[in-house]
Image (cartoon, rainbow, N blue to C red; front, side):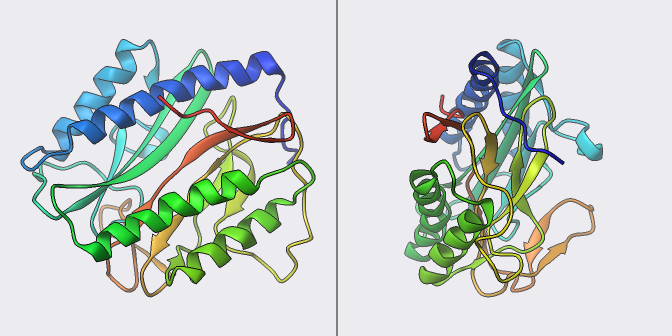
Length: 252
């Protein structure tokens, strides 16, 4: 499938959808406190999204039941909100999608609950730092496989492992479009596959495991953990290639 090249006015539509995602994530970050329940946080984000004229695009997508993926501790991605109340020392990932005027937004953060261990601080930092390092390195003519290889090396150099079988992706008039962008090199040649061009818009989302890369989907058919059953972390931004480099669209 061809990778879409967006016109400037289309990128602005995507920026508008993504700005709402960024605002919702910041709202959740500020309300991540001991005693807050995941269902309350989910409802808060959904209200914010709808009050800004958008729809929570994850709700009903592939059958997902909620507006926000709330991924707690060992859950790395796709966590379903429950009545669980946050406790001191937890870490929680929020992944949010929006649809505004037919255009989609998508981003994610992992945040601490109160005081957390140095080990968990480092785990969260790996996801965030990998994301921003990758964004800084993007340039026209780079291959997507080169970017995947770069992220994998960065993650492994920090002593962690990328989650297998899940990936970043294009975004536009659909929540998931070409290309798929794993956080690791598939195959042996990073110099293969499509190159980046001005006007491409896509999501990068490092998903970090501590000891093992293989995923397990839990009994609710959504929550994804690693086979190591240790805590994970996840960060994501939607970016557009403008004037030769990546610009983040999903900031509040």
